[in-house]
Structures are given as C-alpha cells and as structure tokens.
Amino acid sequence: MGSLLEVIALHPADAEAAQEGGADRLELCAAMEADGLSPSVSTVSAIRRVTDLPLRVMLRLSDSFTTNGAELNRMTATAQSYLAAGADGFVLGFLTPDNVVDTESVAALVSTFAGTPWTFHRAIDAVLEQRSAWRALKALPGLDCVLTAGSSIGVSHGLDDLCRLAKDDPAIAGVMMAGGGLQAEHVPWLYQAGVRRFHVGSSVRQDGSWTKAYVNSRFVRAWRNLLDAQDAREGTQDAG
Image (cartoon, rainbow, N blue to C red):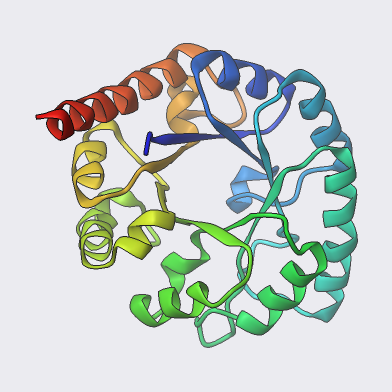
C-alpha cells in the first residue's frame, strides 16, 4: 500500500497548492488557534470548486473534546450541509469528562451519515489509557482513520508510543495517521512500524504560520517525495 499524504486546508488557495504539491487528501477546518473547528459551508463549497481531492471536514464546534446534545444536533445538520457542498468524509472525536472515548456521542453522530468514512482526530492523544481507547474505536462504524501524535504535545514526544502501538497491532497501524508536529525525520521510524498515513499542516506553510502564509506547494512536494521514496524503498525490498 502506498503512503497517504493529508494536508490541512483553510481556504481554496491552500487546496490548490496542496493538490499541486501532490497531496492525496485534504482536511478542512477553521480556527487553528483552537486546534481546528468546523469551517463554514461556503468555505467547503469554494474548496470543492478548485480541487478534486477527497475532502474530510472537521465536525467540532468548540475548543473542548467534550460535547452535548445541543452541539450534536447542530453538527448533525452541519454534516448534511457539508455533504451537499461536496465533502467526502468527516473528522471528529469526543471524550467524556473523565477523558475516555465518548462512544455514545460519536456513535450518535456518525449514525446520521452512515456509509460516509470518517477520521477520529487527536482527541485520542488526551485519553488516559491508550489501548482501551483504541479498542473502543475499533467498534465504531465507518471509522477508517485515527489521527494521532501519540502525545498531546506532538509527535516528537509521542513517536516511541506510536511506533510501539503500530508494531504491536497491525490493525492499529492500518488506520493510524501520524500528525501533530510531524517532522520529516519521524517518517522512517513510523514507516518501519507499519504506518502509511501522514498528516501535515504548519510544516507546509512558510515559517509554520497559520495566519500569515498559505500552503506552499513546494513544501507539500517535499513531503510527497519523502513518502514516495519510502514506498519505493519498500517495493525494492519486497522485490528482493
């Protein structure tokens, strides 16, 4: 399986540059100062008009990982609007006040767009017990990707745990997408552990700025080339 490169896009210019640089998929969100919230429906429509890449749209209304019935109702309606605007999937994740996966809330929301794939986002990095969280996620319908840094403060701190989890359980490796301060030097270690999905945001922007810089297609291309080289190396080893 070849590597997947997902890039965060905040507006159409980001999407165009990400596609030009070789991204495979986009995550659409807003308010990166809050670690990503739901974008406007008009933004999703505008991005859909400039790219044919798969679009996964954030379903998150506050800078908390907890939610409630009123929020879930709003997100249910918003998800349908996103689908009508051209979304191909969603990004979401809720925890209980005790920092365990809120399977009830997640299941309630995803049941309203059954058949649409979705990613559980970095809420998993805030849980108290990783392995039980992964077991809970496996039971949720439609989930095909889990974005994680292995630590709430980024891949640099969570790399060893990510590699251990992926090596111990190929099913986890199959859905794990590494992201959250991901750096090029992390990729060979993750790849060796079986991870094939990678998520980048600030690292494909000049000076890592969300507010002063758009996605730079050359930076995306550097990531694309890095992942393609890993894929080619694996292919050579398999052939040998």
